Length: 49
Image (cartoon, rainbow, N blue to C red; front, side, top):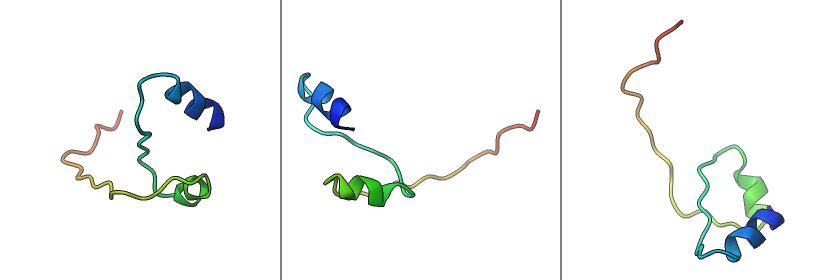
């Protein structure tokens, strides 16, 4: 994550956004903060092949 953050800072990036629930404690330990909930609605299940 440190390498990615250095890369992002070297470009015109202002923030990093992550969609995760299970890994939240990991990112909070890296000083990320919760800012929104990710919601979804499955409209159609994928076809079984």
